Amino acid sequence: MDCINPPPLTDQVLVAFVEQAADPSVETHLAQCGPCRERAAALATEFHTLRRRLFRAACPAALELGEYQVGLTSSGRTAAIQQHVQTCSHCTHELNQLNAFHQEVTAAGEPGLLLRMQSQIEILIAQLIDTLVGSSSRSPALAGLRGDTPQQWHYAAGDWQVILDVQPDPGQVGRSGILGLVLGPELSPSMTAQLWQADQLLATSQVDDLGNFIFSALTPGVYDLTLRAATVEIQIPALVV
Image (cartoon, rainbow, N blue to C red; front, side, top):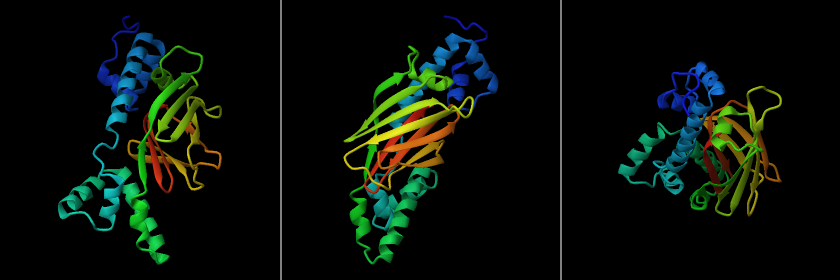
């Protein structure tokens, strides 16, 4: 079907919209034009899949970051990791966590505990296994772009499962909220949920004893969700809200 409000939006403009870098007139066009909305949904799905596959593909492994933190990497790898960390907020955040933990265990007189803990940190990339989008037949990507249809996404990561309900925020028009539930072998009282966008940490939510967490007042866009505990990190990249 052709665009009902010519000229049709180009793929470049639609990609900018998915990345929240488009002119406001693009959103107006999409609200009126079903064919362009469908193209935007298809591009959002491709973007979601690509980011999920490439998310942190160039990052050093968690254990290597730990070795770098305590000076155990070779000079070549040390220089490469140092250069990488300068432009990667995810690795910078992990190193800050390791440094804080190092200071704690050193103060407690257990310097060897850091290396033991590093080898126990498990990094898991969650995989989408089920999607439910309200009672509509539209694709999840399209509903996420428009922000007007409740969604439920079910992810699996090893022995862990994460269920996300994305719904319009009743307190703010045009914004959404995420209600999350973590199910796993052993919920940690220190587990936190972190919401990122464009490598910037936007919000942190504490996961309660039952595995629940919440984010509110989110504008439409693509986010990365990270669940962190002492021995596990679950990453859900390219979450279209």
